[in-house]
Image 1 (cartoon, helix red, strand yellow):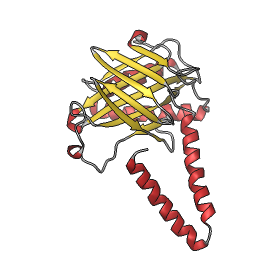
Image 2 (image 1 turned 90 degrees about the vertical axis):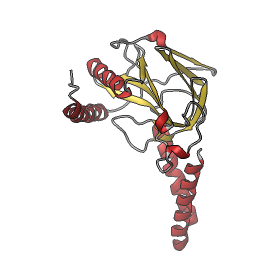
Image 3 (image 1 turned 45 degrees about the vertical axis):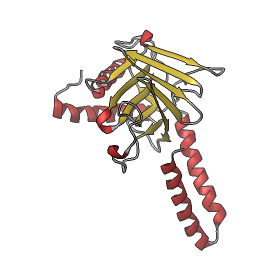
Amino acid sequence: MKLVNWFVILLAVASLISIMAFAGDYGRCFTALLFTTNISYAHAATELVMYEGTRIEANKDGSAIKIVAGSGFDRDYEFNGCKLKSDMNARGGRWYGSLGIYDPVEKFLPSFFLPKECNGVSRTVVQEGQIHFDDVPFANEWIRRQQKAAGSTGKTVWTSNGLLISWNTVPNRAQLNVDVWLICVNGQHPTKLEGATDIAVKVWTNKPGRAIHDCAIVGKDVIDQTRSQLVEDWKLWDGRFGSGIR
């Protein structure tokens, strides 16, 4: 876990101890902290994409990214002969329908203070999770917009059964952006998505068992809310930039 995360946790523990000590109840203080942490981990773990030991390699137009899943939420990212590590956090609630893991990078540290580990890139802005749709056309529209969001220098590839990888480097911010998504349609992997290039994504594992998770079982409320939030966001975006929902 990152040093800053340990520091935040220690501050939280110290605050809880001081409060509960006044009431004379240390035990409940630690129990509450551990219970909250375990709930967050359990919820996110149900909607991960990669099992421990899984490796994903994506290629497009001469650019390549490799993602390696370590224990827990640890992920390694290899690109252009470089390697960065991220210890991601579990999302506390759904973010545009996804309940996965993410690393937004510490906001308080300007990029010019960070070491330039490789080609001007030293930090990860990454996420991994499942996203749930009620039909394939809407999933195809979401994919189209993911490509646009990656920008002119970003790369996005996906498979016919719903594994999508998007990546980009932003040297002036010293960061690597990577999204790993598992697209689910009514609780199942899709079988055919527009523009899919299965050969562009390789998946393997060094451990027994499967490499990629099944789609999590979610309620209709989650699927409906995901659609509603995305459509509203797209309308705002289109009002500014005129992209248009097909």
